[in-house]
Amino acid sequence: MATLQAVKGRIRSVGGTRQITKAMQLVAASKLRKYQKLAKGPEQYTAAARELLEHLGGSRALSVHSLYQVRQVRNVLTIIIAGDHGMAGAYNGNVLRQLDLNVASYKVPQLALCIGKHAALHVARTPGVEELAAYELEQDDSDLGLARPVLREAIDLFLSEAVDVVDIIYTRFHSTVRQEVVSERLLPVLPPAGNAVETKLEPDPDRLIDHATRRILEALLLQAILDAQAGEQASRMLAMMNATDNAKDLIDDLTLAYNNARQTAITQQISEISAGAEAMKD
Image 1: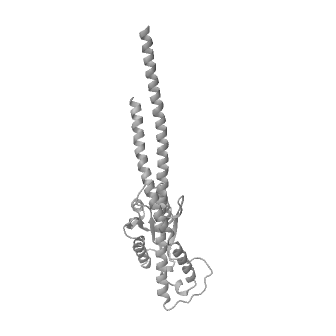
Image 2: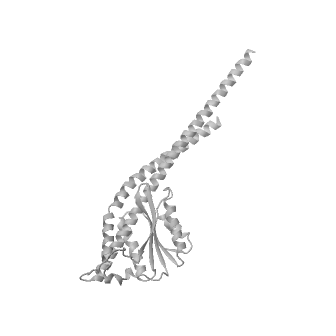
Image 3: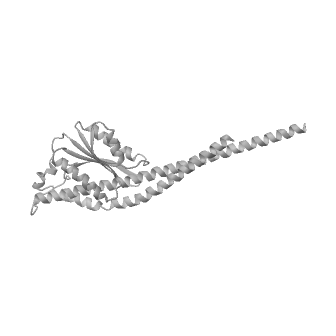
């Protein structure tokens, strides 16, 4: 009887967990639809920005602009975009693993701008990396309100030569079942390879290039944030769906074990009653 009660209690416990994971799956699916739509929105703008960057590649003014200057790497700044919450499968682990690879590849002092609580927690435990600032990924204001201060700080550090390279690590969203962790160079800006021709810019080439480049970088960082948000929700939805399915399978197994134990107990009781009745006849 004690075993039956224990199995029954386990079934109730797993059932409660299943309800929680199912609710989390539905919430993640709802957020995924929102962030997936947002991530697809700026794609055309980002593609146009890359085309503009390639077109500007033939300008002499661009070759001497400070944001395009390649210097000897003495200090590195990395922008890491991870999640604010867990329960998302391997999402955060994959991003942080890429950060560890980047840290190991450089032999110079490194700084970090962290977006997402998991990124900040990991950087705090990583030797050789100094955290400059930490931001929550899910904020009340717009994603552009997050991208702008992060980009402004990164550009200021680069122009002041406090850092010579700015990298960004994030999860690129392809589909619900496919996300890819990437590490990209943000600064110095490297124009896409192409057959760039000499471009005349008027009236002020320096101001035009500076403004266009900052808007391009802003678009790229915003796209990375939106991709990361969609990727996190997709990973969480799949993880909670798998947890819900596993809980159902476990409930089925426990129910079968409970029924078998109950049937065994009933059979034993019948046998005992029959044996007692036979003994009384004798």
